[in-house]
Length: 254
View 1 (tube, one colour):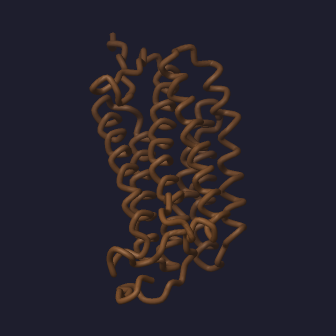
View 2 (cartoon, rainbow, N blue to C red):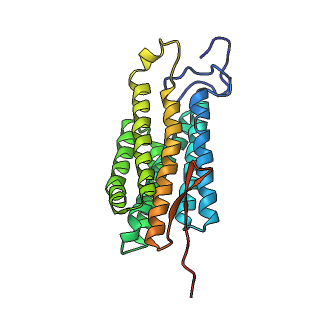
View 3 (cartoon, one colour):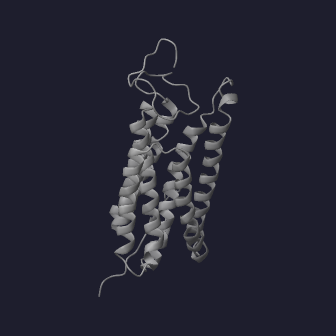
């Protein structure tokens, strides 16, 4: 803690990162790790508006909302460094991955009610266990396994997609998760060395920014693939020639 600045939230009870606490405000423990979630909120909001405007399936609206909830939970965690807020960040991470699993695998699932029912109760059970037991390494391993379960299906969608713009979204998704993971590992493994530098590159904050874009690229790619499955003639358009989004043309009802 910076000298002369007191903590509004009390002693730290959660995991800390390689950013000095309460340097800029007595109300925000890790300043950069907190505000770096803001881009993710706006990106999820943009995706939500597009999903509503073009009347995509509700699953995508819920997905964008879950991205916003996750970013807000992360802000509260890093602002307070309290154990309860850390759980409020980690539990939505798992819920979000369960939602991705549903979106990726449900089109080919023959028993439609079984998958959402199982994933719902799995998410509830995890939330209860995570509230009662302080998971550390176990949480990280569990989260990585959920992420890996998504990989085969994402790869299948990629190889079956012929549209170059949609493939570019998938490549941006891979690039951001790769760079973000490097920033996360660099911040976590070399914190002692970084702390002696005159300038801290704030690797965990960069992870937040990159993962905000990563989620947006993933969601947009999945929206394109789902629209293709439904015969909605999707195209990747760009707002102001830069910001990608999915534009669809639903067939007229006879």
